[in-house]
Amino acid sequence: MSKDREFYWRRLHSLLGIIPVGLFVAQHLVVNHFATRGEDAFNSASHFMESLPFRLMLEIFVIYLPLMFHAFYGIYIAFTAKNNPQRYGTLRNYLFILQRITGIFLVVFIAWHVFETRFQAAIGAKEVNFNMMAEILSNPWMLGFYIVGVISATFHLANGIWSFLVSWGITQSPQSQRIATYVTLVIFLALSVVGVQALLAFV
Amino acid sequence: MVTATETKKVQIEVYRQDTPESTPYWEKFEVNYRPNMNVISALMEIRRNPVNADGKATTPVAWDMSCLEEVCGACSMVINGKPRQSCSALIDQLVQPIKLAPMKTFPVVRDLQVDRTRMFDSLKKVKAWVPIDGSYDLGEGPRMPERKRQWAYELSKCMTCGVCLEACPNVNSGASFMGPAPLSQVRLFNAHPTGSMNKDERLNAIMGDGGLANCGNAQNCVVACPKGIPLTTSIAALNRDTTVQMFKNFFGSDHMVD
Image (cartoon, rainbow over all chains, first blue to last red; front, side, top):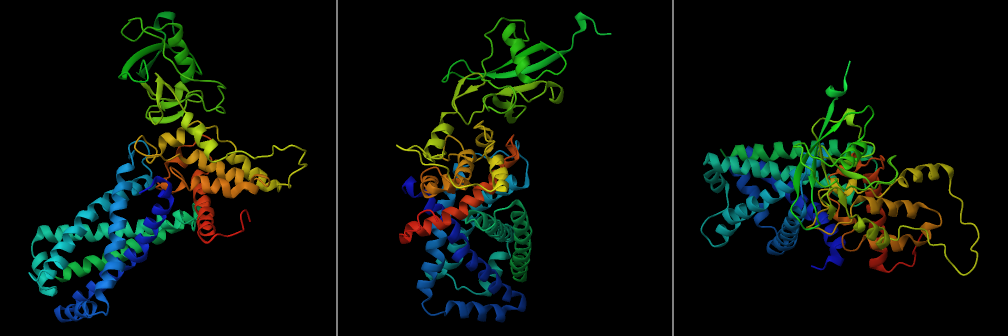
């Protein structure tokens, strides 16, 4: 990746984090929430998603490619920072660091999650349904891992929306950026509740 | 009553480095207290009598300074963990021992002296000036609204001191980010009525290697800036300008500077 193109790679990274990856995460958590209505509701919702036309194309272009670019370029971004919270203990500096920590954690979590659900299903070892998740989450360690994973994802998305708004020049003034902080905080809390409720429905 | 033998002492620790390549080390000093001392006058005491706290003769501490009134930016150093100007760092307001270290984001020349060349190179790269040279008198430029001038004056207070670069987590030896100061200068010169006639050149410069997009929005710069320059507002405004410029470049717009 040429350094002269860095501006465009960064903007692409910022854009893909919201569209489509962020939208997919929100959709994924909402569909998972069917689990709170019982096993059948979840299975029929998951079956509906599975039987979408052009599913493989949708997965590749809406999920895998954007997500992989966002993840790998994000790892590069995360490791070029030299964090200094002990010098500047401001909210924004902590959120900057947390964005990078959750990003790295999510690479691990999502890699594991994709292996455990999609890959195992692809090779025919398992079937993706309510029971599969109930089995995984019956282990308290895995439940903890998934809860941390979901909350990392909702934080990374909400804080990513905040920095998307700055990076594209939508919020400029300190006041507009402060309002965006509150709005994204609400998004974080709302998505976290949706995601964790769905997880707990499997237990 | 304080007698000569009971003079108050100021404890100072300096992170010293003899040459650009040598290993740095801490050295402790004690200087006699005087009212209204600043870090520079304390360093001058050390220079007058270069003896460390153990009573051993040592070399005088090297540092940069010029205006002594926080407008030139030369005397920046890390004082008790925070980068700032040593001329406006008053001894009475500092916790002792006062720890002085160079701004390690820049190459250290010696002791507290650093080489800020990269900042001046960045200013050249982003064309932080108003080009008016020509072979004949171009006459007066467009008039600038007074309220805009007052606003631009705040941005013009930047003294290239390097504190915002030292504060930024994304400015380090592993990255090419030019840092907030030169970016804010792009906003200043693009806001100038004559300067804006070349605004696309400056925007394209900060869309290159080490430019605007390297900002990670930690927003330490705006907290650290000794002149209170709204650096993060400048960066966000430039983000909008470069978004527009990016589309102009991509689709080949002929609206170069409007």
